[in-house]
Each structure stands twice: as structure tokens, then as C-alpha cells.
Amino acid sequence: MFKRVSQIICAGGIAVLASMGGMAPAMAAGAGGDIVEHDWTFDGPFGFFDKASLQRGFQVYREVCASCHGLEYIAFRNFSDLGYSEAEIKAIAAEYDVTDGPNEEGEMFTRAAIPADRVPSPYANENAARAFNGGAYPPDLSLITKARPNGANYLYSLLVGYKDAPQGKEVPDGMYYNTAYSGNLIAMPQPLYGDDIELAGDGDTSIEALAEDLVAFLAWAAEPEMESRKRTGIAVMLFLFVMCFVSYGSMRYIWADIKKK
Ligand code: HEC
Image (cartoon, rainbow, N blue to C red):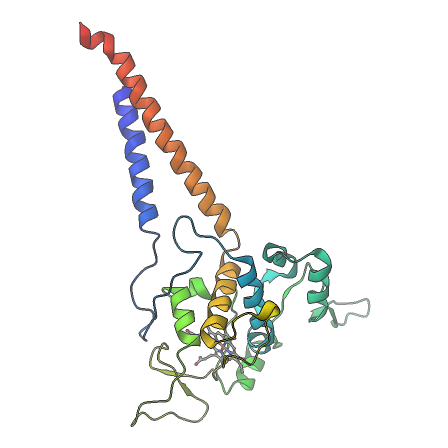
């Protein structure tokens, strides 16, 4: 009986270990384009987010991406994870307008956002977004690193993947050549050029460095609880490990007398 229990516990521990091994970044290509495999601090069972990088990424999002893409699953107060104080969050929220209501006259109205509001889309609705972008829809970015295969590497590759089209490749008006995008023609103009943003603390403003910070920020947005999930995983593994030895030891102890006979 004890032997059986210790076998089950040990097998459980090994299964958990094996599944953690499987958490290493997938090497598969993304949705059909060229994908750069990059090392991320948030990869693997000990992965973590670098707060300074998240703050830089958020700045790039605000200054570049927010004019076309919303972040509707993130509330301003969630930015406390990035290390901002309550007062800073209030000030950031106040830069955005949100629609509220209806008021006593039954009308919707616009007011400055507060920390409990979510980061609004810059467009009133999908049709307005399409009308503004030549028919293409800039998706909400809250879950984008989860919504694409090999999400972090794909997003990084997309942001650094704007190149001159090879000779003979037709690029229609309103489309741009991108090596990571499936089919290589995307309706999003190149958003990052590098050196056009001033980062606090003299941060590196090459396209690659900006893309790296932005991807870290969007990976956080897609899974703000990632660090605590991984910490729980490690605690569970340690517990299973200890239980494995305890149950094996008690099995030996209980059977010792019987074996002697
Ligand atoms: C001028 C508006 C504009 C800006 C600024 C902009 N985008 Fe886009 N984005 C678009 C449009 C339009 C699409 C849809 C493209 C398509 O369907 O071909 C898109 C699509 C995307 C996609 C989805 C690609 C896919 O696989 O479907 C991602 C990811 C993305 N943008 C990220 C960003 C990031 C990150 C930034 C900031 C650095 C940014 N965008 C800035 C307009 C914009």
C-alpha cells in the first residue's frame, strides 16, 4: 500500500517536472512568416518580468501603439504591477477619455479615466477603426502574445520585420512588406523606427530594444499573474519532491521488520 502511494507520488513529481520542461519556448515558426527566436526573462519555469523593461514598454505602447490599438482587458490600476504609485496611475489614467453614462438626462458623456477604468480603444467601434485604417482592423493588444502561436517571438519579429520588398514583389497601396507576417503584406505601417522615442534613464532606443521592451510589456498584459503562477508551480514541485522521499522512507521503515522475517 505504502509502496503504491510512494510510486504514485514520485510519478506525479516526474510528470510535473516533464511538463515544466515542456514550458520552454516553442521552436515552431509562427503564422507562416520568418520568426526570430529570442531569449526572454519571462521564459521557463523561473521566468520573471523586469519592471524597468515593462515601464519602458508601456511608454512605447502609449507613445506609438495606443493611437491605433486598445488594451481593453487591462485596468489602469493594474499598472501598479509595473511599479507605479497610486498618484502616478491617477495621472496616467487622466490622460485618457472614456465614455460613461447614461447621465440623468439619459445621455452618454465623456470624462477623464480613473484608475478603475480599462485602457480604452482609440476608436468608438470596429467600423470606425476599419474606416480609419483602410479597411483593416487593429486588434486589441491585451491578449495578443497569447492569441498568436509563439506569441512573444512572433510579435518581436513583426516589429523588427519591416523590410524593403524583394524585387518583383508587388506591394499594393496601403500595404507594407513585413518578413514575419503571414503572406508578407500587412496593413499596419511600420510603427517603430528606433531613436524617435526618448526613454527615461537613457534607455536603448534601437528598434530591437524598443521591440523587446514592448513585447515584455504585452506579455505581462496577457498574463499579469504569470510570476505567481510559476512560483506556485515551483512550490508544488518542491512539495512533491519532499513527499517522494518521505513516503519512500516510510515505506522502507514499515516493511523493514517484515522483510527481516
Ligand atoms: C497607424 C495605426 C497603427 C499603429 C500606430 C500601430 N498599429 Fe498595429 N495594426 C494596425 C492595423 C491597421 C493592423 C491590422 C493589419 C492587417 O490586418 O493587415 C494592425 C495589426 C497589428 C497586430 C496584429 C498582427 C497579426 O498577426 O494579425 C499587432 C500584433 C500589432 N498591430 C501591434 C502593434 C504594436 C505593438 C504597435 C506599436 C508599436 C502598433 N501595432 C502600432 C495599425 C496600427
